[in-house]
Image (cartoon, rainbow, N blue to C red; front, side, top):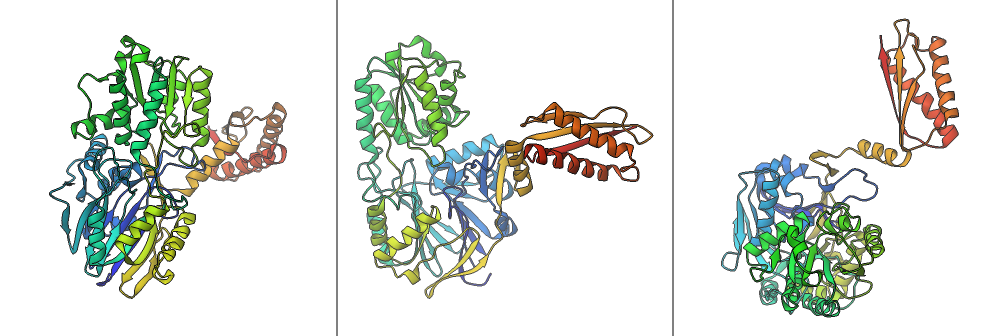
Length: 547
């Protein structure tokens, strides 16, 4: 590309999750975040969804580094896959980098250069860009906004943020520096849109501590089991503080909770007396009313520790009427059914269950409208692009920016794949990349719509395998046999299909055909009969053994 400034949106637009944005000038590219999203119900068998980063692979020699705003999965979850193809330097806070390094070890990826942001080193030169990390508050330690000085002007990415005046770790958002950057002149603001629909201000994380304290005080004769996001170290810290106050030991349950707590403790982001935490295998020696289990599973994830507890599948923990279970979280849209299934199972076991509908045991980590307006006022940008939200969020955010005096002509609502040119004259979409979706199935990476379509058919209509033994004469040696899953075929329908296949072979209809052609004919024959009689369209696999 020429000496123009471009932003390419690879994810996190029109959706919640898989955030990834590339900034390009004169053959220099830097990437902001590299996250994943969780699959929808229309993606059976898929574990995660990550951005299509093929554009970056094709321009790998231009990439100077990946900048991480914070360590949530929707901002770092794709890194093990991206870095396998693009072994470029990664920049972020000590906590973010520790989480990234843990992921790289799990995926056996070596040789990645990492750079840690701290109070003394928060500015980096990457090619023609000067990047400054500016501290913000969010629902995870080590969250930063990015002030990126380019040859055309300053771009300011808020990242995910809220304005919390009483953060649990005492590290306030650096409003003074943000205001100073605004006075220097910001060309473009890209702001978190998640909570643009919410009026007023977000609650401080510290307010949850008071609610948790009340719960501990009112349940002194019960075991406490509290589910929250493993990465929300500030929430975990407040739970531990309650445990210390009420003389309870703490056990972590769930692989990610155990690992992230260990990382946070080493980095002094999580602090507690030495004998407070015990291994989950030791809890049977501790009285119920002297124990608190901090667990994964706040979103009802099928393999999480709390979900397994609710189904008696976690060998070390049995839920009874002596437990008080707290969901210290709010449902991610789409997870409600999973969460209520877990709540119902816990209630069946007699446990008291507390969740957001009953008590304010969670606050959002994202800015509400008044905080978004404050950020706009401080940054005072010439141009504005909303990010990190569905299209309804992005549209409302543009309306909010206009109410703050930003001319609508100076705003732009992007889509994934858009390449936007930024200059002092304005914002202009100059290209549209063909961007697909990369779906992760275990360790296998694929993006085939055909595979998804087949999986949907399997989940909805099942499959039929028909096995045929054909003799040297070209005729069937015995009746076709069926293996059926996901639907019920009556004996009558099976008999009809067998007769149709026998008749086709006996009439010589398949005599001059290649085996592949015969499979197609049999597939059509079976599909037609099942559609007519059962109104189903299963996957049909004919297997033909020839002598």
